[in-house]
Length: 119
Image (cartoon, rainbow, N blue to C red; front, side, top):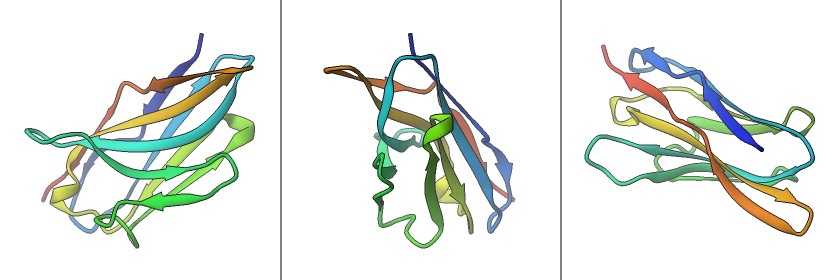
């Protein structure tokens, strides 16, 4: 049984920073690519940033230069450092990971963490 626990959201003023974390708990698995998505009210869920197990990263154009995704494979944890936050970054942020158990791979989602950017 694997659980993804994401945390670190909160209320921040425009221009501020937040750091999200997502940890995979359990044993006997390998965490493959890890991704942050977000969903704003009334909008579809969108990809924010992704990182492969080897550390290759990709970002949505809207966050390039402001957000940084990183991971610690020893802790099965992914981070999202968010700087220069804008009101349009307000959303629920979800962690997503490919979890491998031998030859089978499953997709897991975190429960989401609210990020609100407002003065």
